[in-house]
Image 1 (spheres, rainbow, N blue to C red):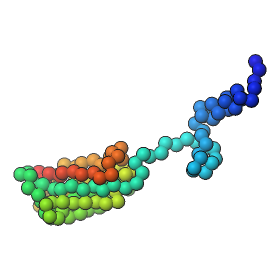
Image 2 (tube, helix red, strand yellow; image 1 turned 180 degrees about the vertical axis):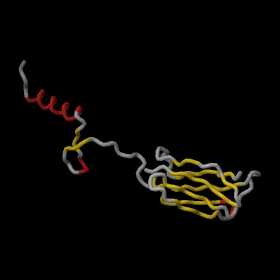
Image 3 (cartoon, one colour; image 1 turned 45 degrees about the vertical axis):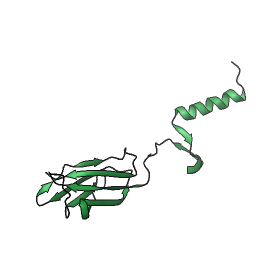
Image 4 (cartoon, one colour; image 1 turned 90 degrees about the horizontal axis):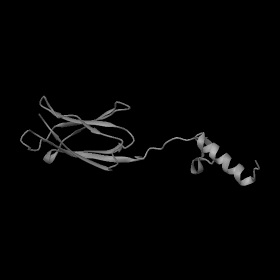
Length: 127
């Protein structure tokens, strides 16, 4: 079997790809293991409102946002029309969201890192 330069280069390129090694280009120009990059880079806003069982807005409820990786919890007290807003929420992390007031609690909602929305709007209903 006769090998020429083109077949050797193509064979080497295939071997590199098959081994999971790719040129990193803008990340340094070196060869290294291939890693998947998160598609949801950046931050989002998580906002919405809290309502009671009769769909009336609840002012003064405490809304909690828990980062599932670090377990850090942020809180916000609802304002006019039961509104709340968390800015600067990391899109690459999963979060849980719920509200409480006077011993009543809403169901826990998930804010997934797979969700690509930059503005995540939700209703929380006290039970």
